[in-house]
Length: 610
Image 1 (cartoon, rainbow, N blue to C red):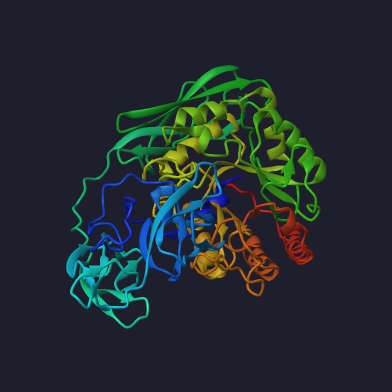
Image 2 (tube, helix red, strand yellow):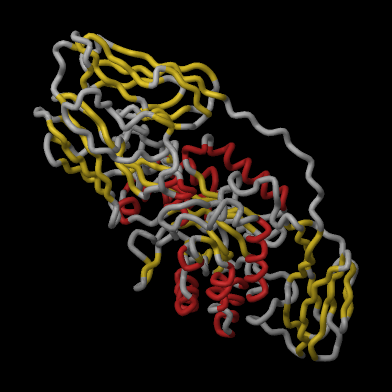
């Protein structure tokens, strides 16, 4: 599943700033600046991949470091690796450029994905022996928080003329790149931008006044009105005389799921004021109706002479696991020909699987004693229309699983503990731009909307626990799920103390009456590298480079500590993701074995509502 890969990538976010138009700068033109014309930077279309700086003037033998960024989710920019080329001078693999001869050169950075490339124009000028002063323009200005401004610097010679020179830039109250592009911070006050000659003997300083961000006064809002009553399950089959507990919740005009008091009625059999339905003795199709504030929802109940499984829920307690212990394992442990190598110690897996392969996967997992958390509708791209989540596409994919054979196989797998749950979506909080890592504009996904997805799956598989993948603290943490039964809560070292993370997740689960499965981001969740573009993940403190700068892998000691702390507290312990080298490492294997041994001795917990 790609959800943790995406999560790891986005944790490397840097500040976004406006793009500069690349200018061709001519060597030797008197008064040429070291950056494009001064003025606030705005109005440029976003690029997916960019080289920084986009244009710059330097002196011969003056080193400059180029870096690259890619636009990821939410339109934000994250640093990335690039392959560097230059039309002249020298540039190394880390983007360090120098030139011994004056001239105009092109520096090209190429990203890892197809069609990702960007070019910077570098004007190299000779040092000026008659330099007497450095002059920065503008000398002073005011900016709003997070705004960008291009500064320029020229050299003033002993005869009073000006000449392009190379300088080094420093700034307070924000950041500045080698071309003089300054991006204000969010703290108000008076700050400085300083340009220094390459030998450091001459400087000039500009003053920048930054206006602090002020929050508008909150305005009272009218209470959202109830707009819909939702009864679950929407349909089921029962044996004559059997009972079924119905659940009901409301949707309001703000799109939130809310508690609602309803009046129940039934056209056949009986239903209590609390929603407990008891079937009559005559077979046929009947209705259970929930009404509140002039709104109603109806469920269809088919009565048969014998209890059926597969198309409906069964009476009594379902979903109890027949296996002991807490399931533990990585995502991606399966391939088309079966389980990958170095997986013998694992007792669980979280995997996306197509409808055509689901029954085979269930049977194989059962034969190997592995418990599955399925993600029947994993991924982003299949459900996007013009970059926005399309519920109809998602439902169409979910409907491919709605066959008698699959329903029966899932019901049996839930009953014997082979399937512990199904995730309807990964990371619903993701929004923005870049590489499909989005569900659309901010606010496209809400807990209420995810709840409706959980309800759609429950209508097909009434006994199957349904949930969603996201950290407990990132997606509408003040709101609650009413239908979804669990979350998969993934930990990385950058979230701070693992025990505090665990306890906060458990507290939210208790508040909402849901289960929680924990997960480790083993490939990108170790101690992060410094955000200096070097992507240095020393083996003394990390497990080596992750899959995206500046992320690093967890060490065996971290895997062991984090796994034991989290795994003993949830209904499952997952990891992202299977990696041949990581799984084959002998120290990691010992850590996996320690976790598996401890979790096997724990009492199994169902991934469903308490």
